Length: 504
Ligand SMILES: [Zn+2]
Image (tube, rainbow, N blue to C red):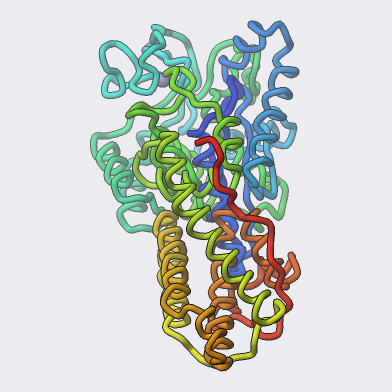
């Protein structure tokens, strides 16, 4: 089985998760579930970034210790990710001993392999506490950080340890241009290539006397810069530096937001090159969830409650909406109206109605048992074409394209019912034709349960079991999509998958 190690960005512990966090986690989860379906040995990592100065401030404001605060935040985030059906295999927190060990070990490995890459210097610049980053002129608009227009930039000057990032510019350009280190989508790759072409400055990788963080190896007055520390989580979660960490490393895919590509596509691979460790194979940088045209974020004051969004139509509906409407590539808009429209059209009237009509007819005309017909109808051919289109899209992390392919088949199946009119076949006593129609519908439901499962895992499982299959077989069902083995299955009518909203 090919191994597939994928990660999401780890989140700051300074406020509740919002829809922006949710898009990233749900998108990565969709990819993890799809790769498992295809037979990969998936390892899916999520976690928390707990060393930022914002944590200290939040803990102080809430009159608790930083440890108590990050414990509380980790529990809150994890609870949301469980509600959203995230299937991560591991959950790393940067305050864990395994991460301290990994961070210290990586810095020591850099110091051994390329002693000139770490040096002491003075840093003077404008620091954004929202990003935990010194800002370059190009990242400042009207005196504020682009990502945090409501925060003040703080002039900061201190003696720090530096990393010789500039040394890796040519090598990174070559690796990215050749595709050996993939940065996707292309718009993000082009941004990174331009940034590299403009040249790289060496970066400060420690802060002076910070209470909350990992001590810099060999210099306890300095603390490892929080971003440098955070990036290493992907490696420390593999067990690095213990032998055997290469079972997972290198990562096959880092899923991150478009605002942090400089860290993941420049600084992180340069750190690994310096240490002599293999680079991740790919970084996928998704866009932002926008609310009336503005980025969803705590500091911008536009956050919609994630809990409210989950409760509105259930977790599957939110997952579907984020991936289908907002999308996993460019920025996309979230509005309640659009969410309600998609819910009603695609899920209640589309997917749910198809399942309920087809299963009701199987119950009515064949006591729920799928007839053993051997025909291949036009809808069977549509199903085969859909599986191919879906696979192409999902292999390219085009999650919207994958959802479109599956829901296009839903529309075709609902149309098929109208055109073939099984009730008329029953009335006319055309039993062979009725068998073919009911068999075709059971096959399309089987395919849809499988194809929709990375998007709407909960409801896909309900449909799957309604078709008479054991729960645990859904994850291994890809091989059966060519001709779904539904003949003779005892089906039953499920609960209404997506109830029509009463007060929307
Ligand atoms: Zn900022």
